[in-house]
Structures are given as structure tokens and as C-alpha cells.
Length: 231
Image (cartoon, rainbow, N blue to C red):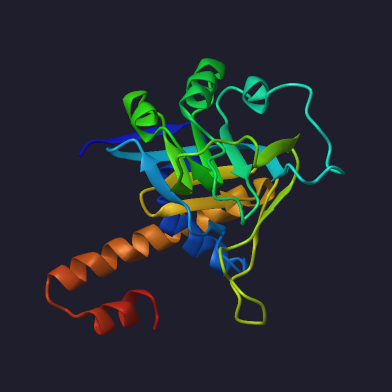
């Protein structure tokens, strides 16, 4: 498989999603910025995304109190952004389809990340458009859910996380936060933490390279970790 990167000049693009999560954990993030249960469904080749978030909040159509949008949310997507959609967890319908991919590409958006489901997988793959989602469905958005807000702060909860001190913490995505996504998953980096994340991710990358060289030479994982990681 080929590997492609769709990003700006942001220094986060030189790191994998895993390396960035490791850095965020060291900085005190309870979840490493990881948006759980979301996987790459398109394209079929390896790809890495690094771009700012354009956020979309979906609500159930039964929610009459939530605001209504005057424009389709894809039509207001910003060039160079990742569209991040948060759908109600009980919804089993898709909130993104082939026509939305075509619209997003026309607007210059580089990918979509969905805390929810998509459909029209063949169309996304034929368009070579990156789609990360929790799953897919044959039924569309209507009459199940509707968009209620764009460029709003999202709080994305893990699927079936439960409660209590051991529950995986939800991820907050603020418009403009950096989204890094690859075949391992999706990570959100708060805008004000980019420099610190880059610094720690670079150190971690260098340490792992030394560990890998020693392990391949037969030194063993425990001895390599102790020498280079200090544990």
C-alpha cells in the first residue's frame, strides 16, 4: 500500500497518532487526545491527516429545542480543514455520504472524522477522500438526526464507556484544534499545546528509534527500555 499525507506545514505532521498520544499523556491529558472507536474506512491505502478541526454537532430530530442551521454544514466547511462530526450515540444511521464527500472536496476540506456512521463507502474510496468513522449504515441522516451547530465545541464520549474513575475520559474538540489521524486512529491536539506536544513527541520518537535498533540487535525489550526509557 502507498502512504500519503494530507496536511499543512504544521510540525505535528511528522509524527504518528500514537506518538502524539504518548506526548499528550506525558503532558497530563487523561485520554491522550484519542477519539475512541473511530477507524479509517476510506481510502484503502494508508493515509495520514494533519489539519485543523471544523466541527459539526448533530442532534436527534426529536430534539426541538436545539438550534437549526440556515445552511448545509458542508457548504460552510473551511478549506484545509478536517470536518469533525459528533452524532448522538444511539443513532444507527449514517450522517455522511457520497454527496457530502463531493461537497467537502469542492470546498477544499481534507477529511472527515465522524463520531457516528457513514455510508457510500465505494464513493468515498473512489474519490480518495479520507473518512474516519465508528461504523457504517445503509440509512441516511433523515429522519433520524439533523445538524444543530457548526464551529462549536464538541465533547465526544467513548462508546459504552460506563461511569466511574476507570472510565475513559471524553475528548473535547474545539474549532481550530489540530486533528491527526492515521490507520491507528484519531487524535485531537489543543491549539495551545502544539509546541509542547512537538517537543515531547520528537524526544519520544528518538528514544523509540534507539530502542528499536537495540531490540533488533538482540538486546531484549526490558534491557532496551531500561537504558533508553529509564524503566
